[in-house]
Length: 211
Image (cartoon, rainbow, N blue to C red; front, side):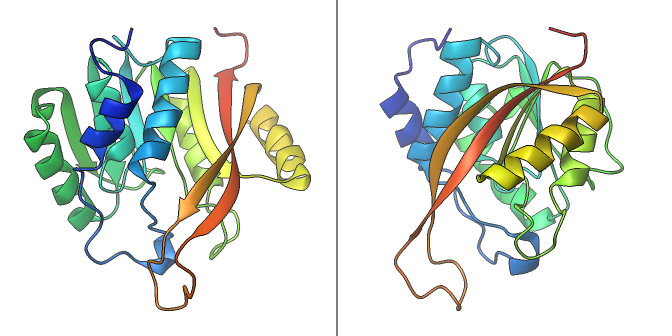
């Protein structure tokens, strides 16, 4: 169920979620465009029914677009987790302004130290461009927390092969891979173009033996 919201309305609401005022390149703090977040969440809800009525966790939530969007689409409760206190303050302010303050919480913690039980994890971890393997602790934590995980990763055949093996070793099964394209807007001084299109894959992962 997507309630009374359309995908376009969801994108418009998410455009009101502020970006990080001082993003850190070491943490790969790029903000997904509101239209792209809306597309991702709309697919998760309308194709798989994995948002409405569910308890969700967003690991590495940043300023909270995935988490807040999930709440707007009817998640019963959403917890955003990040190691950046500034990002969490922005997320909390935006959640209040968009009327989902009562169904969202923001936790300052590393993914390695955080644990709770949830129905679904939706995450956009670092792609490992600056720090190789930066996405692996996110996958490990996600499968500890929930039986269903949605995780964005850089595309490419070699990356898919590696992630499938890695996820299998964690006791997970890759149920679906949805190819997407996201826009990296000029965020840091080394960005010289107006925007970069990056091919990514949205993985739907299930714990082995669970549906």
